[in-house]
Amino acid sequence: MICCLDLEGVLIPEIWINVAKKTRLKELEITTRDEPDYDKLMRYRLGILKRERIRLRDIQTVIRGMSPLPGAKAFLAKLRKRFQVIILSDTYYEFAGPMMEKLGRPTLFCNRLSTDKKGFIANYHLRQKNGKKEAVRAIKGLGFSVVAAGDSYNDISMLQTADRGILFRPPAKIVKEFPGFPVTVTYRELLAAFLKDC
Image (cartoon, rainbow, N blue to C red):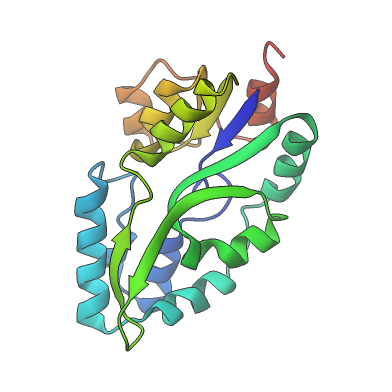
């Protein structure tokens, strides 16, 4: 079995919410928990960054000051002792590096950003459309069973494609819209859900 985890909201705080706090731009607090259309969300974010003259290095400074969610590193270490673990995220390698160091360098599949000559984010580049879902599909195609956990709209197709999907600290509206997934709110509960039937 391979365990697939979302990153933001499951192991680390939401990057964009932290950027919003540091820049005092409430507009950047919108995440995939609020907006299911990822392209619409990213175009909105990039427009704000351009308007406010916020460079990639400014966001990276915020990220370097962040820590994993309390208990996340210990949970991940316990999970990795039992299973192979892959982090499937819609974030970007240019963002995630410092957090991966703090989590013990787990395997991460995510996307990339491009910048202009002045260091402003010019565009985002998905490795693949519906990348989380397609990664799970590919892993299953290799003969593995997959259990996946996430918290947001952009995790739902991954959870639906996995052999078992688990919600972790999701907003109430997602629980209401997708009642078929078990809901966990602590790392102990999440670990128990991964261990179920193993």
